[in-house]
Length: 193
Image 1 (tube, rainbow, N blue to C red):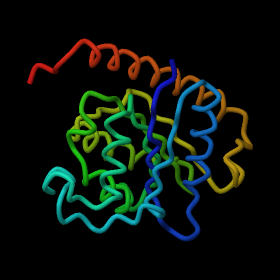
Image 2 (image 1 turned 60 degrees about the vertical axis):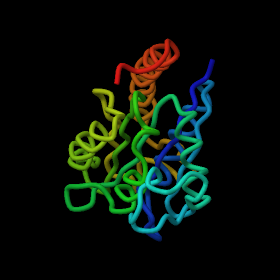
Image 3 (image 1 turned 90 degrees about the vertical axis):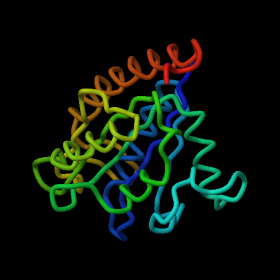
Image 4 (image 1 turned 135 degrees about the horizontal axis):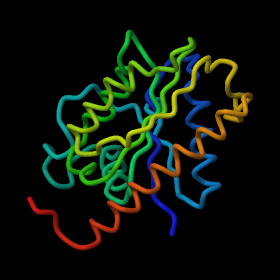
């Protein structure tokens, strides 16, 4: 049985490269029999955080928040695609993540990071780990870091370097293990707190 996996993209820049990494991950997840859904902040256009979803009276949250809350509640795990902005995560990603909390609980996350340079966004991934853990969706141990994103993937997300597909396969297998294990545990019943 496939997993339901929101793929949360973090960039809204006009010349963003992360969309290529998101397309790669969506394609790989689909090929493995899962149900990925791209969550693009450029399309969702969430306002800067004023109220979290849970702070709205029932039925009064903006439609986009209701849509995302439903998607997140059905999720078995989350794939986060982040750039590195000044050794941290893009503001659009942080804003997108911060609108929710309980909807993430007891689901793993996995980080795909990228950059124009050789480090592949790993400094953003390190920062992001603490945020994801605090939100209740701790990240799996591995990350998929893609350096030189401008040439590493084509516009449709096809790798131009063989190592990306191989590393992506190992990365996704690890994520699947965690997502399936936590799904089984959630299916046993209520959480202890």
